[in-house]
Amino acid sequence: MVARNWRPPQGGGEIDIIAWEGDWLVFVEVKTRTSAEWSAPERDIGIEKIQTLRRAARDYIRRTNADQSRIRFDAISIAGRTIDHLRDAFAPAG
Image 1 (tube, rainbow, N blue to C red):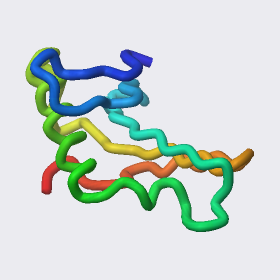
Image 2: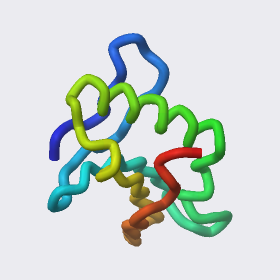
Image 3: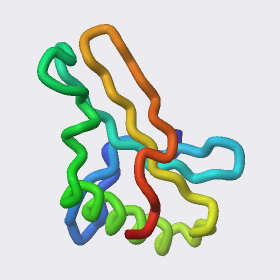
């Protein structure tokens, strides 16, 4: 893991987890619910949240000189005792 709860210095969002998987830099959004009775937690990742995550990731990439062609956005969905790791939850650019 590279960072947890990373925020750009100028504000504008938070990335729950930044980690390396091989040579991929992965930005992870974590969503939790006590159960999935009403809907899956990852359904709460709407377009505004995705745009905020992309902006924060661009800032992180710029600050660290990371290879922008080797990034991925994942989501971790926790509903009760069920944990799902959703790779490529959304595209880097919109």
